[in-house]
Amino acid sequence: MKKLSTVFVLILLLKITTVMAQDTKAKILVLIHSDNGGTYELAKEIASGIESNKNVAAVIKQVKGSSNPKLANIPVATVDELPSYDGIAFGSPVYFGNISTGMSEFLSKTVNLWTNHALEGMPATVFMSAGSGAGKELALQAFWNSLTVHGMVLISNGIRGTDNINKAIPQGNTVLGITSMASLKDVERPTKDERGLAELQGRNFARTALALKGTFSKKQTSVTISEKSQDFDDLLKQKNIILPQVPQPAGNYKPFVRSGNLVFINQVALKEGKILNPGKLGVDVNEQQVKEAAKATMLNVIAVLKEAVGGDLNKVKQCVQLTGIFNTKDDYTKHADLMNVASDLTVEVFGEKGKHARATLGASSIPVNSSVEIQAVFEVE
Ligand SMILES: Cc1cc2nc3c(=O)[nH]c(=O)nc-3n(C[C@H](O)[C@H](O)[C@H](O)COP(=O)(O)O)c2cc1C
Image (tube, rainbow, N blue to C red; front, side):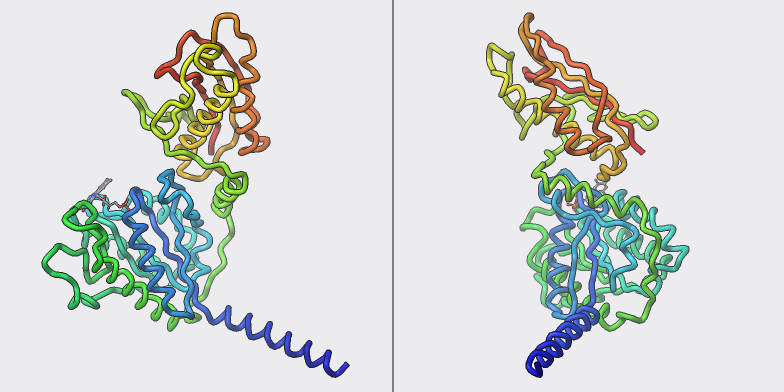
């Protein structure tokens, strides 16, 4: 009995110590927007620098979903989670000497946090991926402008680490934060030194965040719909549904048009730059192949839809109508069976909101010799 109670006390002590250890560990968000992955490359170095401090954990998230395969698996952050961290490292591409539109849109949703003083006193640091580097300091400064209004404590780089960099090539070091000049292809970008300075920035930031931990209040703000934006990414992952890159238009039109709350999308069976199972049913391809093509086409539709709602599929209110057009012979009648693949996928992803009105028809030919074209109308927030 005595032995049993000693074991129990030991377990209890272990639990308490674990909880205390978790509580003393600082958690830093590395929050990025990236189009081509340059900012993400720097983010990984920043995160690795942060995590070199065993008392600090880093998590990389992005401000909106991306169809770029390099970025598609990075979780999307919500505005409401920002106050829960001990520090935030912000990264974005340089857009015309400024922060990127994606980052700017995300920050514009933080008004509620601002008026609630939710980020006041929290340490922040910034880094950016540039092209030629034109206006990079202006852009970093612009980042600081927004974060200063939030009352965040901005952590600069100064000239830390620059003594040791290769000065024979252009480097993205600045006193405000690290940048990389992605379009200067003299060497691989980010350069070894840009990566090194990013890592150093992360290390220094972690130290400051740890020191400031607990000195500012982590205000809870109401959790809004943005919290749910993670849900769809998880759902797609669980169901092993991988959205393709958004197909680019082949002419003078757009992948989607939004009119009021309706989004209009038309896609063919383009997969990895080629038409999947092209041709006419019963001549070049069989029903199974057309069904595969219909699935690829519907995935394209959903990828475009995701872009139309700024990466947050929670904003989809209803799939209103799907029209499936199939390249068939004159006497073919089982179009509905072929289209069921697309309908089932839509319901699998969106549940009740995926249930739609539907039309199917045959055509004697379809552009680019696709065996199927799908036209879709969605209602969104
Ligand atoms: C709209 C737009 C404006 C840009 N303006 C600048 C600029 O002022 N200076 C610069 O060096 N690069 C500029 N760039 C290039 C991007 O900053 C560069 O491609 C960056 O590496 C992209 O980062 P990412 O790989 O994370 O998407 C601009 C790019 C875009 C799309």
